Length: 399
Image (cartoon, rainbow, N blue to C red; front, side, top):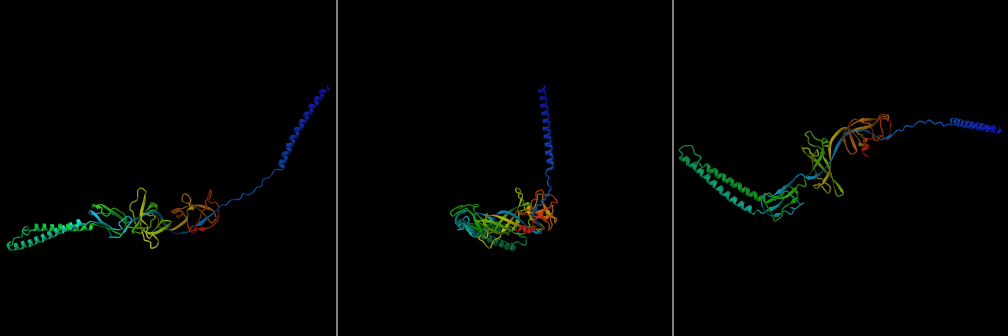
């Protein structure tokens, strides 16, 4: 009996201890929560600072702007010719300058063809001419005699043309005229045995030499004027529309040509002389031809034919426009302006002319406007900015 009671007491004791242990855990948990609530950290509220981007601006200045059209071309001679023999024969003599690259003067004899046969032909033609003129004079004398005889014996009747030998006289005059033309042709043939330079030129090719036999039409030489030079300059249709012209449509201004020879760059002036009336279909471009002017100074007063040159043409003058750096132009022909309150706005502009560094604005900007040069991330109308400087467009361009 006592053992049973002892077991029951132990069970009751264990139950009490378990209950006390659970209560202790619950109490400790509640105490921990209370302590956490009492000792919790309170976050300090701080004002967020606004970041205002710093920007670079330029102040717009209105002025007249002279457009400059840039293109390129090759120096060419304005006068070129190919000489051919007009008569045949053996070449007896050539000029010392008659060689590729040689320089000849106007009227200089380049090639001499043997004139012996043509002199003989001239002698025969002159004999035939003398005989024809003698026959003509004799026929005229017969006509005068026939007229005198008719006056004596005609008894006042109208004179007959056959009596006055009209057909015989006409035939004699025709034979004399033909003989004169034959003599002139023989003289011309002798003159044609000398092939002369038609103008001051350089020899591009010399195709005959002493001893060669040429026939009429044989090509003898190719010449070009090395002091009368021009350049054909292609222009896009947009640039073509900016050429400066007078009231008659003639192109005004001048061109600056530059070419590199060795390690030095030379410059030459040129003036427009004509515009090709036809547009090239393949490239849809127009061509303007400028004449090169001789330079008084320098190693090369004229550029050599075939030299590649860069050209800059004076174009139209755009009046009362604004010029800004090209980096300030946004896509869609827009710019960002900054007002007096340092807030930005978008402005649509009319771009009249573009260069590598600048944009010329016709409409959309006024003198004194400030254009933002700094690329902003996510700009919106009314955004506040901090202006770092206030340079003018002219100062920016001079950098």
